Image 1 (cartoon, helix red, strand yellow):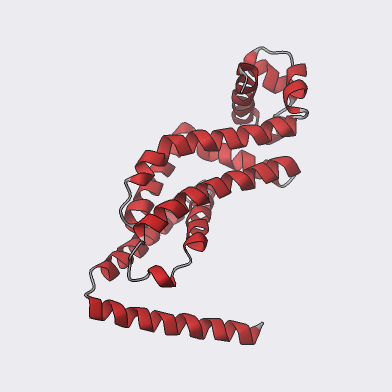
Image 2 (cartoon, rainbow, N blue to C red; image 1 turned 45 degrees about the vertical axis):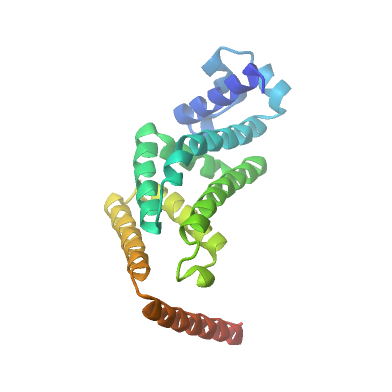
Length: 218
C-alpha cells in the first residue's frame, strides 16, 4: 500500500474525529495532511470509498494491537475481562466515539455501511477463534453455537460502548452482568463428570423443547 494512501486514511480518521461524519469532505481530509484533495479521488474514487478503507484499516490496527491479549484468555470470564479492559483503553483513546461516527455514517453511505459490517465480522471472527479454543472439550461445547456466541459478544460490546455515552451506570451494570455470566460458566467447569453429564442432558432437553415451541409458533 502506498504511503499516500496510508496518509489519506490516517487523515480521514483525523477529520472524522475532528468534524464528525457530517463534516467530513475531501477538503477537510486533505487539510489534515496538507495534500491536494484531488488525491482522495485519484486513490479512492470517492470520500465514501476512503472512509470505507479507513474503517477496515482501523479495525486491522486494533486487532493487531489486541490479538496477543485475546490469545491469553483461558475462559469466557477472561475473555469478557479482556474485552472490558480494551473498552476502557479504546474509550481513553477516543476510539469509542470514532466507532460511533463510523456507525452513524453506515446508515447513509452504502460502501461505508458494508465496510463497517466487514469490520465487525473481523472482530467476531477473532472472538470466535478464542471461544473455539476456550470451549474445546468443555461440558457445554456440544450445546453452544460458538459463531452465534461470538457475534453476541461482539454486538454486546459495540452496543455497550455506545450505550455508555448516555448511561454510564447502566453500561457498568451490564458489564458486571456479563462478568457474572462468565462466573456461571466457571461453575460448570468445576462440576464432576456425573453432574456435568446431568447438566448437559437437562440443557439439551431444554434446548430441544424451546426449539419445538418456536417451530410451533412460526
